[in-house]
Length: 252
Image (cartoon, rainbow, N blue to C red; front, top):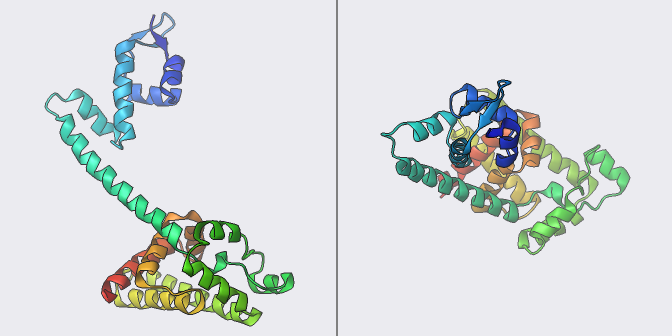
């Protein structure tokens, strides 16, 4: 009698809807039907499903999976070689992002030496110490962390107001430039990226171009930073990251 669609979904850890979709597009049609017209899968169908899921795990789109399984002229090894190269590249990017998160730091993750009333006056509903424990766990052993802690502890309420105002000004000018259609690799974008680096260097910790590029990657890799910049203007996190990269290349 074979296996029902529910049984196969359980075996393969996919949804019944996924199996229905594979049937509808002809990628995996069950070999039989029950007397009531329900799908019934045999061992050969399960073997094909296993290969489909293997290619899907590697990132192949469904149309390419169909070609790999059904076209006798297709060389699966060549497809796998190409996919291996793409996966290796992706792994490299993720490792760079992980390194960026481990090495980079922003002032808003530091402890702020203000009274609760002063914190509310400066930061509003945002708690500047929200990620202090996480920051210490990730970067507590770095010189950048120690330097940022020293600077943060010395900042007065007026210092924080100035620091935040400067940051907002840079963000707004970046957003206006992005809206104008300018490239992130334009001279103006690189100049603003340099201002951004100078703001960090002057207010938080020594920020080399290498450190700055790590921060740029973190703005895109960490959804919290992405949300911060994209609240100013959707897409601003990526635009700033690209401008930072271009500026670092220009200065190299």
